[in-house]
Amino acid sequence: MTSKLEAILDSVNDEQSFLRFVQALAEDWENEQQKEKANPSSPYGPGADGWENGTIGAYLDAAVSWGDASVDGLRFYEKPSNPWKRAAEILHMGKLYE
Image (cartoon, rainbow, N blue to C red; front, side):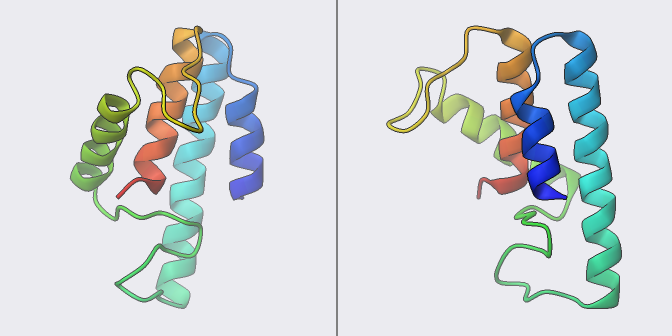
């Protein structure tokens, strides 16, 4: 589902598309949880769908950490001017950022 999630992320430009992204992110989480119950991944790496953070606290902490680190952009990341897109990217990176 990750490529679908990233396609939805790419389309975020307003409140409605942001909410679609949040719903897709929740579905991505649920999908990984089902996969992990059936076939657990190593505890030393990401889950089946790339989730690095397995608790809401760890997820939110990672999202905030990445948001802080990228507030002025990064070497390979240009901060979008659209605040809905920026918010979606912060939430998405909570999934991936360690």
